[in-house]
Image (cartoon, rainbow, N blue to C red; front, side, top):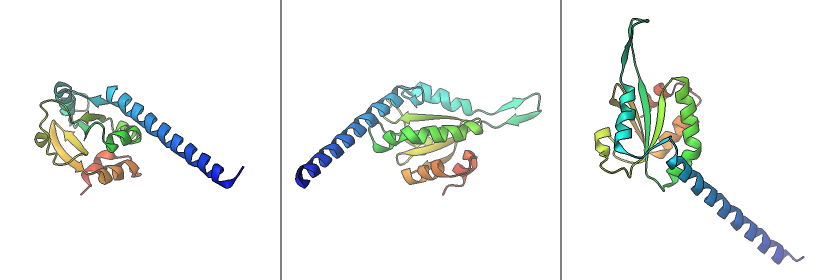
Length: 161
Protein backbone atom coordinates (compact mmCIF):
# COMPACT_ATOMS: atom_id res chain seq x y z
CA UNK A 1 0.00 0.00 0.00
CA UNK A 2 1.47 3.32 -1.00
CA UNK A 3 1.55 6.45 1.13
CA UNK A 4 -0.88 8.41 -1.09
CA UNK A 5 -3.67 5.87 -0.78
CA UNK A 6 -3.10 5.56 2.97
CA UNK A 7 -3.29 9.35 3.32
CA UNK A 8 -6.48 9.39 1.25
CA UNK A 9 -8.11 6.72 3.44
CA UNK A 10 -7.11 8.56 6.62
CA UNK A 11 -8.65 11.80 5.31
CA UNK A 12 -11.82 9.90 4.40
CA UNK A 13 -11.97 8.40 7.92
CA UNK A 14 -11.42 11.83 9.49
CA UNK A 15 -14.22 13.35 7.41
CA UNK A 16 -16.51 10.45 8.27
CA UNK A 17 -15.78 10.85 12.01
CA UNK A 18 -16.47 14.59 11.86
CA UNK A 19 -19.72 13.95 10.00
CA UNK A 20 -20.88 11.35 12.54
CA UNK A 21 -19.96 13.66 15.44
CA UNK A 22 -21.92 16.57 13.94
CA UNK A 23 -24.98 14.39 13.30
CA UNK A 24 -24.84 13.09 16.87
CA UNK A 25 -24.62 16.64 18.26
CA UNK A 26 -27.60 17.67 16.14
CA UNK A 27 -29.68 14.77 17.45
CA UNK A 28 -28.75 15.52 21.08
CA UNK A 29 -29.51 19.23 20.60
CA UNK A 30 -32.96 18.25 19.31
CA UNK A 31 -33.38 15.90 22.28
CA UNK A 32 -32.52 18.69 24.73
CA UNK A 33 -34.97 21.00 23.04
CA UNK A 34 -37.74 18.43 23.41
CA UNK A 35 -36.83 17.54 27.00
CA UNK A 36 -38.17 19.08 30.19
CA UNK A 37 -34.89 21.02 30.57
CA UNK A 38 -36.03 23.40 27.82
CA UNK A 39 -38.87 25.89 28.07
CA UNK A 40 -40.64 26.44 24.75
CA UNK A 41 -43.60 28.68 25.65
CA UNK A 42 -44.11 31.93 27.51
CA UNK A 43 -46.60 30.57 30.06
CA UNK A 44 -44.14 27.89 31.18
CA UNK A 45 -41.38 30.51 31.45
CA UNK A 46 -43.52 32.75 33.64
CA UNK A 47 -44.55 29.78 35.77
CA UNK A 48 -40.91 28.76 36.19
CA UNK A 49 -39.86 32.29 37.20
CA UNK A 50 -42.67 32.33 39.78
CA UNK A 51 -40.88 29.44 41.54
CA UNK A 52 -38.33 32.01 42.70
CA UNK A 53 -40.86 33.64 45.04
CA UNK A 54 -39.63 33.82 48.63
CA UNK A 55 -41.73 32.22 51.35
CA UNK A 56 -41.95 32.28 55.12
CA UNK A 57 -40.98 29.08 56.94
CA UNK A 58 -43.08 28.73 60.11
CA UNK A 59 -40.82 26.09 61.62
CA UNK A 60 -37.60 28.08 61.29
CA UNK A 61 -39.42 31.41 61.84
CA UNK A 62 -37.70 33.14 58.94
CA UNK A 63 -38.15 34.02 55.31
CA UNK A 64 -36.55 31.58 52.86
CA UNK A 65 -34.93 33.08 49.78
CA UNK A 66 -35.66 31.21 46.55
CA UNK A 67 -33.76 31.50 43.27
CA UNK A 68 -34.05 30.06 39.78
CA UNK A 69 -31.59 30.18 36.89
CA UNK A 70 -32.73 30.60 33.31
CA UNK A 71 -30.34 30.30 30.37
CA UNK A 72 -31.60 32.09 27.26
CA UNK A 73 -30.22 30.81 23.94
CA UNK A 74 -31.34 30.55 20.35
CA UNK A 75 -32.10 27.12 18.93
CA UNK A 76 -29.63 26.03 16.27
CA UNK A 77 -26.67 28.05 17.56
CA UNK A 78 -23.38 26.54 18.66
CA UNK A 79 -24.15 27.49 22.27
CA UNK A 80 -27.39 25.53 22.14
CA UNK A 81 -25.38 22.50 21.03
CA UNK A 82 -22.82 23.13 23.78
CA UNK A 83 -25.68 23.03 26.27
CA UNK A 84 -25.24 19.25 26.05
CA UNK A 85 -22.34 19.51 28.48
CA UNK A 86 -22.98 22.94 30.01
CA UNK A 87 -26.47 22.19 31.32
CA UNK A 88 -25.57 19.09 33.38
CA UNK A 89 -22.73 20.95 35.13
CA UNK A 90 -24.88 24.00 35.91
CA UNK A 91 -27.70 21.69 37.00
CA UNK A 92 -25.39 19.83 39.38
CA UNK A 93 -24.03 23.06 40.89
CA UNK A 94 -27.53 24.46 41.29
CA UNK A 95 -28.80 21.20 42.78
CA UNK A 96 -26.37 21.60 45.69
CA UNK A 97 -28.04 24.95 46.45
CA UNK A 98 -31.61 23.70 45.80
CA UNK A 99 -32.03 25.97 42.77
CA UNK A 100 -33.83 24.99 39.58
CA UNK A 101 -32.32 25.56 36.13
CA UNK A 102 -33.97 25.68 32.71
CA UNK A 103 -32.88 26.46 29.18
CA UNK A 104 -35.11 28.78 27.15
CA UNK A 105 -35.35 28.82 23.38
CA UNK A 106 -35.56 32.53 22.52
CA UNK A 107 -37.72 31.82 19.48
CA UNK A 108 -40.72 31.75 21.83
CA UNK A 109 -43.61 33.75 20.46
CA UNK A 110 -44.30 37.02 22.32
CA UNK A 111 -41.14 36.89 24.45
CA UNK A 112 -39.68 40.28 25.40
CA UNK A 113 -36.01 39.80 26.27
CA UNK A 114 -35.67 43.40 27.47
CA UNK A 115 -38.17 42.58 30.22
CA UNK A 116 -35.46 40.30 31.63
CA UNK A 117 -32.63 42.83 30.98
CA UNK A 118 -31.18 40.69 28.18
CA UNK A 119 -29.32 42.61 25.51
CA UNK A 120 -27.29 39.80 23.95
CA UNK A 121 -27.51 36.05 23.64
CA UNK A 122 -26.67 33.66 25.16
CA UNK A 123 -27.47 34.96 28.62
CA UNK A 124 -27.77 33.35 32.03
CA UNK A 125 -30.29 35.10 34.28
CA UNK A 126 -30.56 34.67 38.05
CA UNK A 127 -34.03 35.36 39.42
CA UNK A 128 -34.72 35.89 43.11
CA UNK A 129 -38.20 36.61 44.45
CA UNK A 130 -39.45 36.87 40.84
CA UNK A 131 -36.99 39.69 40.05
CA UNK A 132 -33.89 39.73 37.88
CA UNK A 133 -30.87 39.80 40.17
CA UNK A 134 -28.04 39.26 37.72
CA UNK A 135 -27.67 38.79 33.96
CA UNK A 136 -24.52 37.09 32.74
CA UNK A 137 -24.26 37.67 29.01
CA UNK A 138 -21.66 36.26 26.68
CA UNK A 139 -20.67 32.66 26.21
CA UNK A 140 -17.19 32.98 27.77
CA UNK A 141 -18.62 34.29 31.05
CA UNK A 142 -21.13 31.46 31.19
CA UNK A 143 -18.29 29.01 30.56
CA UNK A 144 -16.41 30.53 33.54
CA UNK A 145 -19.39 29.67 35.75
CA UNK A 146 -19.46 26.14 34.35
CA UNK A 147 -15.73 25.47 34.66
CA UNK A 148 -15.27 27.20 38.01
CA UNK A 149 -14.55 25.02 41.01
CA UNK A 150 -16.89 26.88 43.35
CA UNK A 151 -20.08 24.90 43.98
CA UNK A 152 -21.95 27.96 45.29
CA UNK A 153 -23.36 28.95 41.94
CA UNK A 154 -25.34 31.93 43.27
CA UNK A 155 -22.26 33.66 44.68
CA UNK A 156 -20.35 32.84 41.50
CA UNK A 157 -23.05 34.40 39.34
CA UNK A 158 -23.37 37.46 41.59
CA UNK A 159 -19.60 38.02 41.49
CA UNK A 160 -19.42 38.01 37.67
CA UNK A 161 -18.60 41.37 36.09
